[in-house]
Image (cartoon, rainbow, N blue to C red; front, side, top):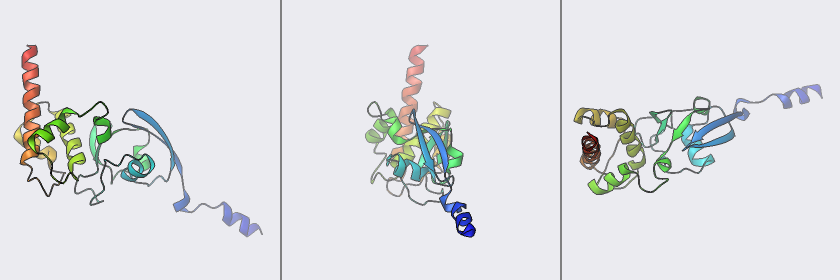
Length: 176
């Protein structure tokens, strides 16, 4: 009987849980989750934010890109314990007040076709523009290098980023 009670109190690694607090798109979320759960699964399955896509699952395509504490990350590579107490911005967070200027530029410049890579690509563009308000062509290419698109050939995406950079330059010039 003692052996039975003892084995019942031992938790298997698959049963292990942690309390997790994350700030997603400006809202605090409290979860009870396995510490090794992937952030992409937490976003999609627990929080129902399905704009973040799952594609390769090994960090090579960028479809699951989100911004965590101001840095672009592949949500398929981030575990729950790594995201605990972090601030996450997803594609849904960009469009809370209508289309974000990046999304508008993608529409105007043909920066998407099937749309599967688009959420991750838009998050990558946001990260580029946050770091470089007026990026060079090389900074754009480098910033997008972790995101794969099989449909657009990238030219519409690059045009969208360039258009946004031109608008930012014009805005700054008009303030002077």
